[in-house]
Image (cartoon, rainbow, N blue to C red; front, top):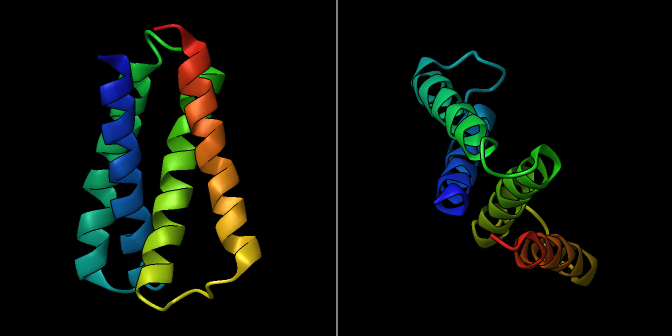
Length: 106
């Protein structure tokens, strides 16, 4: 269950990070109204997941999901370049997430 909670926290991280970009430094109210509750929920779920998972594992997976999710969405929307090194780097992060999950034993 901790892994499902952590995955959900990571998905919320994607949402708040993208909304943070859209807030233009907290100058736009609409995106700010998305950032604050989703960031709070994401941190709360991360904290719950850390009850059962090592902090380093949980934090690495949480940030990895957020980073790869945001990068992937920006690539799909044409907001970030699609280069071989970028794709390989995202793949390395995903491989790290998978490795941490496989090595967790839970």
